[in-house]
Length: 191
Image (cartoon, rainbow, N blue to C red; front, side):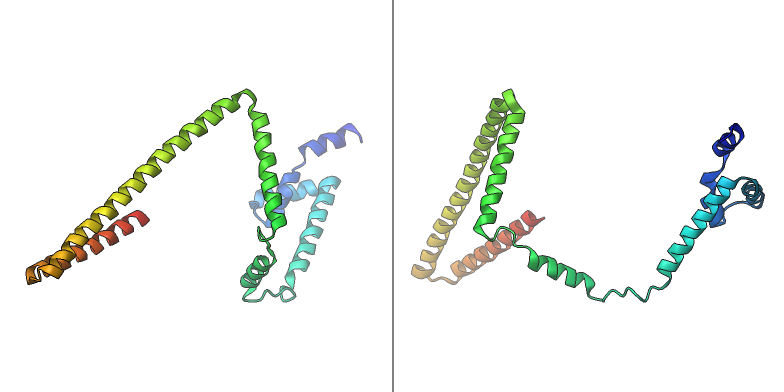
């Protein structure tokens, strides 16, 4: 290759061939590009190659009737995928999963090196604080349920042994308010 051809190859607008094929040039830029292609054999060869490629793509995607996707294609794929998955149903799968977790745990321990003691200490503090919070929640629920039993027992004794109409109304209002309050607490916790 001589010096003139090498110089032309560097200044060739090969990146603009796609712009030319898409028809996005201004008339003046299109004329300049066509003049360059008339004298540059490598750009002309690249232009013809890209034209052939576009023609082949147009031919390949022209007949869309060949590939017809059924209307329930996604449902069929999902059902097939779900039926083919065994998950952790077999004992072998559970053993492999446990073995893999153990190996990964050992790799993490090896990666931590001297910091392993600090990590276990942090996990210990976390577990201790979680146990304290769980104990508090358990005792709160237990005390609430015990208090509710005591109140219900005393109110039921009033209904059975002192059958006054006003006590029945108070108990009814109490039960309705308890159910409403429970419903509000449950809705709040779901949000």
